Image 1 (cartoon, rainbow, N blue to C red):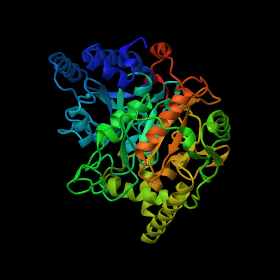
Image 2: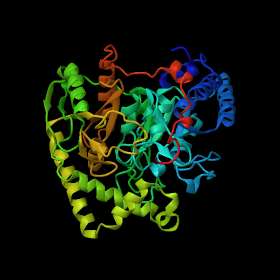
Image 3: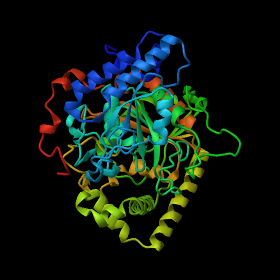
Image 4: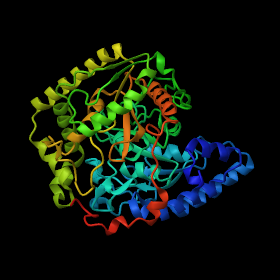
Length: 497
């Protein structure tokens, strides 16, 4: 690569440790890339350049003194704007918090800093993370770096674009209906949804629910595993954090370095739609073409779906409960400051009964049991990363797919939220481009608790794809983005269209 900011996080960290790359040089390179490219895509929305440069100088001094260095020493990190950062504006994409500057870091941000990571800025999100089109009334919309008129997905859309364009070495994200995986698919990077509890989050308002989790994002699997090794752990404030009294359960070495597995030893099931997701015909065709090129690498490869009957309803009810718990107060006191997606979810939730909730929970449990049976037969499940190719970001959400109306504003995320219901770990990795010339992603799902296993399978596939231009990670045209029109000058940039 021609610039330090284009180095992988793992490569940059190794060069820093060997005194061959200055943290100051790396941070300056990322800042320059932000200043040159962000006007075209609008992903790094709050910036902390002065403190980042100071932290880089301190990091460089530690290297030159021969001090012990953390796992992320000197690496610039972007933090999703749903996560609080001390002294740096955190808005949640909501005008209610447009001027909010937290006094403390969220737990995982604190851990990233402790490991030597340098927070360079905040990355854009949909309002409160609702929906998978990263646009809001505070910062406007984030464009896709492969076509700035198209959606970057979300809710970790800003993080995905920052990684794809070299603005940060690593980025944080979170995932309820696929918010780590969907933007990874749209932008040609890696997003990993870990098992709930591996990345503790004591700030979860509904602490006993399993749908939402924090997770890492990177340009490749090794980088993602590196960040996962720092974010994973235990904390008494999160009731679902993995715990055995008196023992440290999660260690960095469980996740990093990832170790490629022998694919020929694995049994894999391929599914274009999980038997229920409204997958676009275009995406089905691309999925068939891509998987045909590598399915023989596995010991056994079949086309089979788990039984996901009732998945839509189960997720819809569970999601609505979460929105009622977190946002009902704003709906009642400041309704004009909430966008259409928030209104839709809260009003849907107000229409449900306890009987609906109980039925949804029972169906989710049945699907979980079905997955245990499914993974008795197969080691890995592979699907497309998302149901459609990126569309114009002016479309708040896809109201139809192949002419068929969608159930909700998030129905097009069914390939990812179906997996969310099961609690199984899942990763999305790049797999070339689709027929429209946009990035195409593969979702790789592993067995219950198989987080390290999923990372290792993903690494093996990534290595297998590297020498095939049809499967390897696509990269945006940075030179073109530097000259591209300002996204803020495009009609509909602010708000919800």
